[in-house]
Length: 184
Length: 243
Image 1 (cartoon, rainbow over the protein chains, first blue to last red):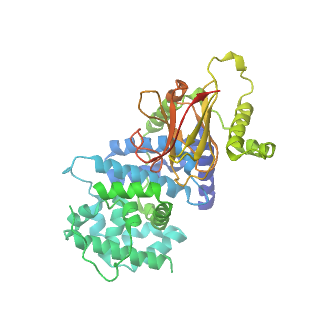
Image 2: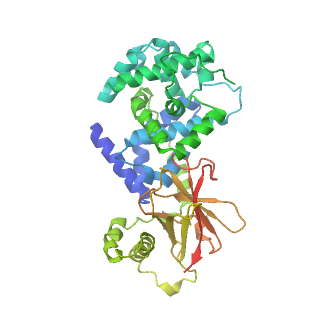
């Protein structure tokens, strides 16, 4: 299905969910759960926790679908933001010292543009990909890993084996350049 | 926990807190304070949403994974517990109710909103014979600390739901309604609109509500409070009164 049609169908299902139509929530789930489950799994690294968070996400969508504003955000971005936020909250509630999933290490090591090749599919993605390529490797890897894995500055610095200040500087400078490039 | 980053000319004076919070880079007190700022500062919230949109295509690099078969059933059950299936009815197009605003043009915003609530309730389920129920219709005006009314809430006598009408602009995007029974703790009712009227179907807390209960609205993170108790600032409160 065409991306615009998908987006419109999801926005419509969210609007119906906001009116209390349970069948519409099922449609939202069918159209978005694989993506959201992937996001939760990536951050949490554990299926049972990712399932719990995904359940929380859709229950809160049921309660709060009226907060979605089609004029302001894309439905899948709105849903993904809720999933990321909830998954990060869950990670932060864990006991300190617990082992973290391995995905991030791979991301830092393989910060080449090809690791982000999935971006090429849509226009907005092509532009982001172009702008990420303009960054230095460590900046690009750290920003992508922060977004996808939900790691703190501390965790990213530890993984990359650099001082905290260096990691903050990489990310902050990277974000400033990225914003300038995207708004060009 | 952390040393300040070495300042560079490039970073000097640039506030990236919204991006840092969106990315989940902050933790502990820094994350909590950014979260509190998101709830109270619309400009900050808009910056977070802007960064979210900018980086959103990155989620396309994450492999989609179908959740296990049984998960939808768990969600369905959780939703049913939240709001029983018999109460899941569609909101009868608030637009129709608003179209009748002309009738009430001379009234103040507050009384017009209350009138609209009554129209909504009448349109909603006129088949219910009024005398069949012993519970009274209940209303509450939820006001800010300075006395400014922010919401009018009407609970119908069959306790099927509460219609919540914003009467002045609320800046937070995630206002959540709570019910506080006399001497009890706040219990979640549902998310309310910032500008549009909204019907929230009855939860168990609402169905057992007495005219002694107090309603309150707090500003919460996207999707509502993650803890089941208010986590953000309470922007309006009001006692339920029997009509």
